[in-house]
Image 1 (cartoon, rainbow, N blue to C red):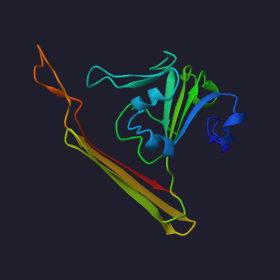
Image 2 (image 1 turned 135 degrees about the vertical axis):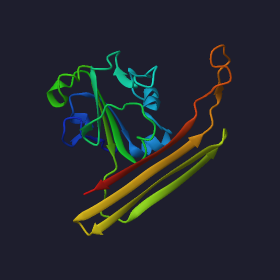
Image 3 (image 1 turned 45 degrees about the horizontal axis):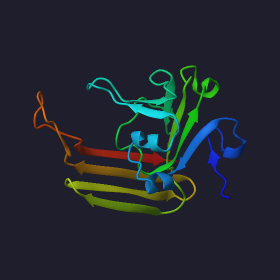
Image 4 (image 1 turned 90 degrees about the horizontal axis):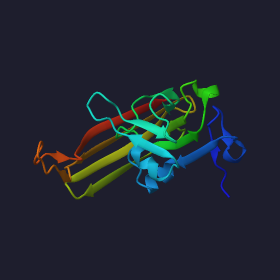
Length: 196
């Protein structure tokens, strides 16, 4: 059986030895299951919910066991992040870990409900990369790619990745206020640079 290594307690440990309820998904699993944004995780993480903001000002937030905004913390690349649920952040990922229950010791007292740890792939010593093109109905065009370049062998490593997605909406408002308005459109660019 393949060992699962998690960083739930700020160091690499075997998942079997960590005394915390953790759901861990590898980058390969995220791609295999077509997890495009954080709301897709609700199908794989018990007791997780994503609440969408109703206005442009209010943000989406992640919830575990009903504890959300102000009760859970989200870390992206080991830094606090408050933009939960935004498209374009789950590409080229190394892992996603969801910690259930109070995590105040390592993540502060606002982590009563739990913590979400998103880890993008880090630069490696190998020259490698990938490109993925997806076409679909509703004029869907998606392009994703990454390139890993060892600039100075074993000393300076660079990884650049990006994603572009464009799709027409598939829900039309029947009215009476916004009759004919399309929803579920997608049109965004997202990119990431890692330097070690």
